Image (cartoon, rainbow, N blue to C red; front, side, top):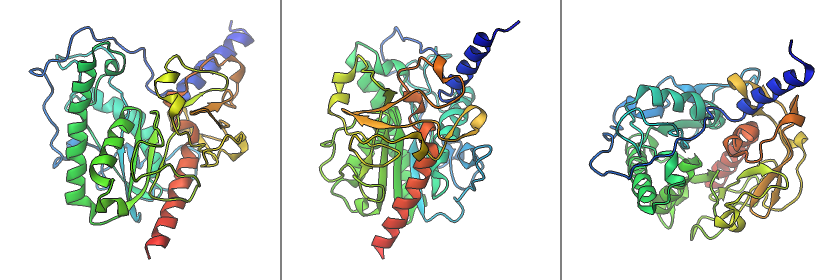
Length: 349
């Protein structure tokens, strides 16, 4: 018979899964990057090479159970170019060790049912969602002791993202306002896109905002694109990395100590505490809507939170809430995109 404590532990495990979709123990690659053994490139003229496009039915069209929201893509006046995080974390099932194969149906299903469902959907209220498949670098790119492995695998991944963005510009954009969004590895590529296509270039005038989530980003990252200081400001970027209050990760001094941090409940960069009541909602297990799941406070480059306010929270031991950077603040992001776009369109008249 299950004891009360064991029941609560099961609840706790379910709650961990709620905000850490597709979580698994990462596999450590033991071979070096081989330039002669890389997966075939995607063809962005084919829908198969996209996780999400406005004209096809995909996970980015989804809405949380119990939210009462509507997909606004059909009448949207802006586009989001969303770059997903690292889902390629397990042991390779083919010889393409360092970069994922975009023609691998199993990998694509994992991408679609995790990040596209739980993250890209935050933008479908105000934007048409464009999310490319790309030869994402394996998780080992972030843990390898060989810098060449990291550089080569991430460079290959960015080559795809860049080609996808160029295809988007040539075939879909037609001068529409653009939101750039990414998480984790996706943010690494998003920052490069901003530097290559927006910084000191005419396309900067189409930038509504950049959501650079899950990777430390300094205020000096760009020459022209600056951290936004209010909820309605446009043409800049917001960024945060989520941790349990009081916790400093062992990699804190590798960039977090100098990072900008935006509070996704107030959209300011000051250290004013924001209670959970300001949280409009997150998404959880089976894409269910979760009300007021977390508070937030900026602290020295990090976003600190108390344990999420859910049943069984006393048993939660998670300190690094990286996987839930978007899940915990899903509805606030959705509302903020709408506000910034409204302001952008007003200023553009």
